[in-house]
Image (tube, helix red, strand yellow):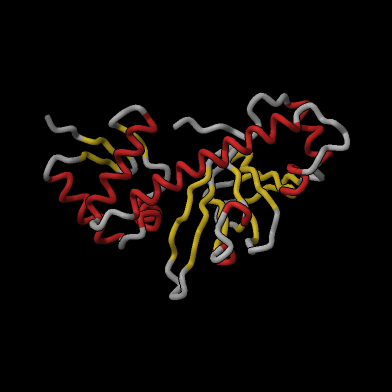
Length: 214
């Protein structure tokens, strides 16, 4: 599953023109700050130019869950989420970030300037939407597992496939991984210890190795 990026095949000069044509804004954020206010009617799209961030959802009891982890050139916005809970989402920077913000309507309308990059950009965004759909189904596969162990093994297997290696680095901290898997952190750490004792995995901090059995 290879991820397309929104600026693939677009030269820097064309990107500079796009920022003007789309009335886009580039903003910088320190770590642990809100990147965008979500609402069910917002048409703003964000592109993470640098850094990392998480889409955070808070339930009615105030419990925190990570809906998606964002890395460089990922796109995010209310339009990519179900309207029923878009207002419950916050995009929070995990490190210093730079973000490009523009209106989705600028992307889909006919370009009056006949910009050469416009069709390329639309094609890239459609590929990203397709990738996010596959990513969503992968997430469902994880969350549909009934036990913490099976959630961990399913997630680790997906990361191993993405990295083409049984050894990989988690994209976020163990605390955040518990929020991502919708499990209790202490229970998850206990299960990971059992998995190490049973030689299913080895781990040191965020570095994980799946130990394959014959």
